[in-house]
Amino acid sequence: MDLIIDQYGVHLGKHSERLRVTKGKETLAEAPLINLESVLITGRGISLSADAVALCAERGIPIHFVTMTGQPYASVYAAGLTGTVQTRRAQLAAYSDARGLALAKAFAGAKIENQAGFVRYMARYRKERDPDLYKEARLAAGEIRDHLAEIRRLNGERVDDVRFELLSAEGRAAKCYWAALQKLLLVEVEWKGRETRGATDVVNSALNYGYGILYSAIERALVLAGLDPYG
Image (cartoon, rainbow, N blue to C red; front, side):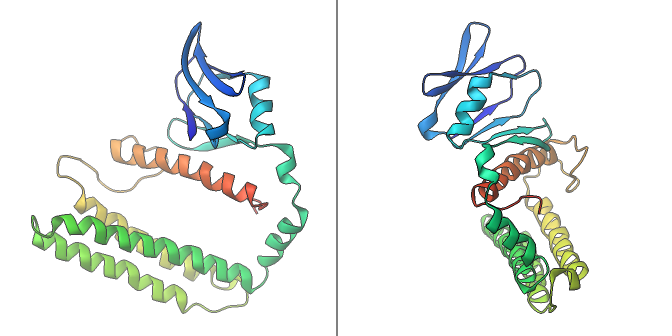
């Protein structure tokens, strides 16, 4: 489980084998350490005890800090998790050879595959109700997936050799993806399109918040694997 704390003026402390969230004398939540994977702080005016931080570090439970709009700005990990020197050396070396290119193509390709798959999944619920939209969404899914073949054809000795082409294909697939989702959303939801920084509408705000949580989960996985999230 993940413990998410977003209420102003609360305190995160240690209580036996649990983390306890309190406000004044009132206990708002308790999280047993045995089931806890991460702590996510998403609000302002939240205090943490040194004992709670130390306990999380001992158990390998990261504490992530995210703005109310979903922008990660800090993370706390156990100091020992950064000691995987050989793994990080291999990670940095891969940037300059074919391994880095293979990984970049795999990441971009998987993203495009998932985007096309999700559009097809959303379209299935329009097949009977709105056949024209169903066909349009299926065509969009195919168009998104066309960029996958473009990525697979890229050749080079390192990722920098094809960086522009890779980002271009990924970006054009994403543009088609968000355009398709915009049409597939319920009519009562007003959404003019994808916006990241500074978004104030409900859909983009929810997406940005969700991406912030996802970012923290991915960062945790990378750190636990001994990799540098910023390398």
